[in-house]
Amino acid sequence: MSTNNYPYQDGFEKYLSIQGLAPITIDEYTATLIDMFEYLSNFNLSYQENHRVSQLLDRDVEQYMQMLVDNRSIQNLTYNKILSHINIYFKFLFTHGFSNNLPTLTLKGKPKPQKLKRLSTKWLNALSEILSDEKVNQYTKLTLLLISKGFSVKEFLKPGFYKLMSKIEFSENEKQFLKCFDEFIKPIQIKQNSSDIFLKQRYSDNPILTLPGLHKYLNPSEKMLGIELDPSVLYQSYVINYMVQIGHNLPDDVISQKLNLDPTSIIYYRREAEKYM
Image 1 (cartoon, rainbow, N blue to C red):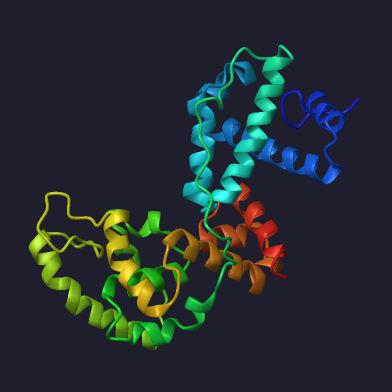
Image 2 (image 1 turned 90 degrees about the horizontal axis):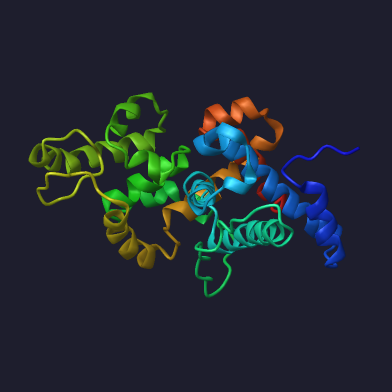
């Protein structure tokens, strides 16, 4: 007798097989659903109470999908593929009488990009030159520098992140840039009465720069450098590059400490890195 790794696994996989799906495709469904239910078991309070799949709501699935975007920086194509797996699973439960809910009914896919871009590490190789380029604005430089140290945009736009700066190892070239950045940011910090390092240049009661606000600085630099400067794409390329170059030989606990990733995210990035090895 087999043990299900997620609710109704045996029945659902038999259903997929009858529908003519290849074993490798069924394995993708399995990986998605195991990951989702592991996440819900660990982080979703309502599911933790009774572990009843029939009581899951759209907000529960949405919480998982948002985690994939925030913590794993998945792109739209991957988002849509995972949502499709989950949607077909819940339709199976609904049509076979295992659940009266369709929690994916209100969830929408992400727009497809005009063309699929292969992740590029061009910016990592050019970082030293970029930091020395006076034409590139300071926020763009700092964004690239911090992502190259393994921080996501969600982390370094948080209030108080500046307290971590003294704990990060920087090269001499990077230290030279940071001196220039200090000269740039000091008057703004005085104006905003804040020690944070990503600040709006006009006075505000909420002085921390938002992600849309950061993009206003990144977009002109993107055109000038010829490098895509979406922070989530940059972060993903950094992590995968790290996994390819170093991480594939390291245990999970070392990677978790270095990149601040949870176990399921490490599994995800290991799989993605294999595509580039």
